[in-house]
Length: 256
Image (cartoon, rainbow, N blue to C red; front, side, top):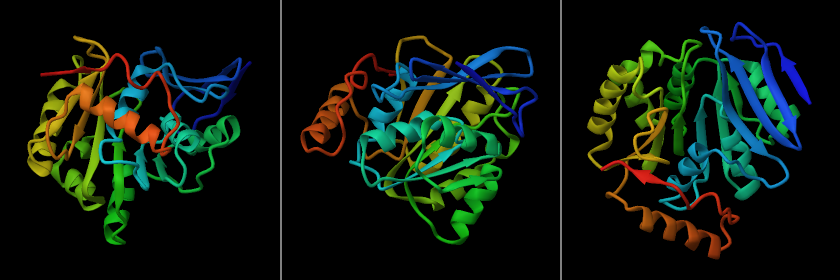
């Protein structure tokens, strides 16, 4: 079954497919391309997206985060996975398009009410002003043309992010279209993040030479190997802190 939601941001309706309880959300971008950018299986409580599962695996390095900030919330599959697999984690979502929150509530029964409709920089400045801290901040921010907003090419933005991050916890960023129009911006952002969060970071993917989505993890206490991260995940499963998902610990590639 396919539904269409009127977007307050995109030029075309947001398409939501429910195929045997697997929810797939798509948009048409400014180049008339249909882009699938989030999906989730409500029955099995997982996703076949290696991009999402790799991200989840790595942010567990410091244990279970108590407070998570997701910028933008169009990646609602992350929030749904956290709600289904971990108890007592507080999620805050920020998105410029309120329709994304409507979809998350109606189609996935997302429980969190901490959903802010505004641009991400305004949200970050507000968190800094009230001294609210998060254990994990995930950045997945793109305009309609799949370019990173200009204010996310300024070091002051990442200083605001640091001010909202608890010490020794993790910031994660998705670099989409890595070998395409954004490459010079990514290099600049990477330089900012290395400067602010020191040298311990990891560049991960699910296969070598895949340049579509690449995840970078910053503010690590050391460089990690895949084996260490997998063992950490299995330890958390054994301790009953997270539900086991066989999709999590496979097909991760670390860029040397």
